[in-house]
Image (cartoon, rainbow, N blue to C red; front, side):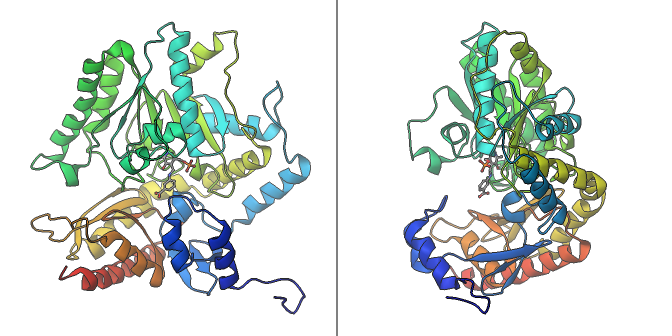
Length: 462
Ligand code: PXG
């Protein structure tokens, strides 16, 4: 079709047809999607997105946990344009560098936890995780302890979907596909207090879960364990916030047995929890961290691994190559956008805003508007991330059975009623742009309550 200016326009049906015929979506049942037709997202501004039918939706997920500074930031567009004109691409492999990547490495080193002052670049969180896996194992080989190769992670963790990410993650649905997985990976329980603690108090349960790491290390032998990897708060697992006792005990155990502590900051990084990193919020002292998503507010793909002194000194002490890297490691345009994104975050004092102002307000409003709803069993969260457990009976803490996907029912009501919320089984999760205002938080909570009512009407007698 042609519009008045003789340019080709596409209807929603055109887009859906091309999509159904040729596009394989991530984490999607393509058959079911093609019967229904994908929702076509057309434009975005601030914390809102519009579909091609003109429906406006409050994006309670910041895209996919990433558009931290909100949509439509002209400064980020300008940074990309300028860098594309100056130098659209050059690699960083063969003893070359460029200003944006060098500046970004310095900038990241200045905001990461103490000692993490060498930065390796990648394009996605999954690639950053692969980098961590290879780097920590390589570290122990260089230290002449090659038998220290096992990495311990957690059930229900998400560390991306490359083979290393899938293997380190704790998602059983992923493990079944594309196996065999990477060897020498072991898992321990997750610190999911509301769902799995029984009668234990939060701090008691936090200690039990952390001590599962010690038991695992003792079973395997500390001389065989390279690292422990975990997200500060599990994101894709349903926003699981560990009890306060958990991280200090994990830290103690890693120190005691000389195990590297790798922290996956792909969701928690860049202000989400009210610190630059989740490690700041939980007072974790990691040896290595991954970051992606919020690094560029999702405007371009870029990820990084910040490497602490223990590992970087080992690497730098050896006169040899680290044989690892991606064509687009430190892509100049993505680096320029990330730099501008961090500059904007600082200029707008966004981390402080999440910590002292909008984060506490969001957590308070969620509880005051939603906690007494019959479907809501528990709300947990920190800063601008939250998970809401939907239950069949909140007094007896009875969960819905597998035959009823309450999360998907709720997610569909949200989409139909102008709110984007993600469902992780029966948990609804929220991670809105960090620039959200007080009025927008109120709107989000009211919309969520309305959608919970619609969901309740659907599931009441089931
Ligand atoms: N680590 C963590 C903690 C993540 O949340 C990755 C690594 C991988 O990043 P990339 O950029 O390779 O996707 C992630 C990504 C969801 C969802 O449905 C979550 C993620 C990605 C896609 C979907 O919640 N997190």
